Image (cartoon, rainbow, N blue to C red; front, side):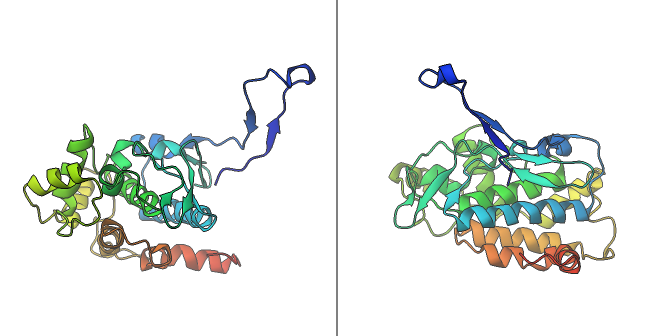
Length: 265
């Protein structure tokens, strides 16, 4: 999470009239969005390191009862030299009310391409899982070097998600009657083979994941498994941060951190 170094106070004569507050934060080199759009070669270790850092930051936020609600590549700052990342832009962040979801429910949160189905269909009744959905979308975008669900509008966004991930059989998660009627009218889809989707990315030279059947340090099929874990736990709207962070996808990163005597996971 981005550090807050200082807050610049108003001048002595402006205490009653000032309108702006200046926050001083560390300077970062670029954003994850610019990295994705660049010609920089990205390896499996980049994907692991970026995602693990983001999940660690979210684990800290969520343990404090805060949902970011606008995670996207533009809001992930990156330093090129060491690949450190920082989560930033908390303008839409809200505290969590365990019994009622977000403190002040707002339907228009999260940039469309990273917006989970329950945000669009449940009239503000959502929880921390909406952030994890956004992380899964960013992982897919890192691998493909293009957005995973590039919907043109609210309805198109849902259609693309259902066509890719499969149409949910259980509709109880949809809390808005109008949205439920619309989803029930859609042609049902079994979902696409995520393995083939990411193979296309590698064929275009945008990812080296599937270049070999098995690479040193990580089996390429782990990406397929990880995306399915993301789909199972998040698409059914069940929140399991611990299972995500303990997945074998991150085993190399965790071993490295243990070697350097990092005490937190």
